[in-house]
Image 1 (cartoon, protein in one colour):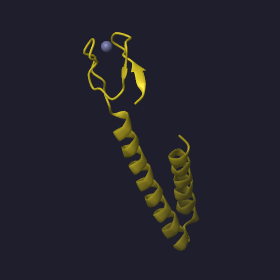
Image 2 (image 1 turned 180 degrees about the horizontal axis):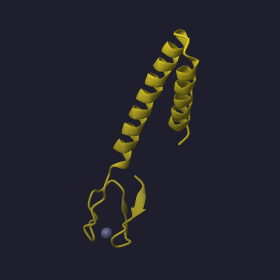
Image 3 (image 1 turned 90 degrees about the vertical axis):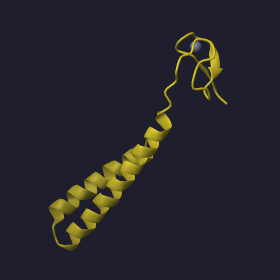
Image 4 (image 1 turned 180 degrees about the vertical axis):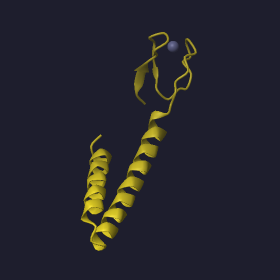
Length: 82
Ligand SMILES: [Zn+2]
């Protein structure tokens, strides 16, 4: 249970609480679900670009295949490097 500093009154409180017991400062807890959404979007982009790259190379379209590969690599880097 990490202890954080309340931005409203500078008292040290648990980060599990939604409201500061001293000053009533409301904490917005969105970082966790936002991270999950970003990961899902990145995974989808990786899958879509990988699929496009495979189809494009199979059909002999190296320009679209290379572009999709670049998009896939960028998404992979963003997915693993935080
Ligand atoms: Zn407070």
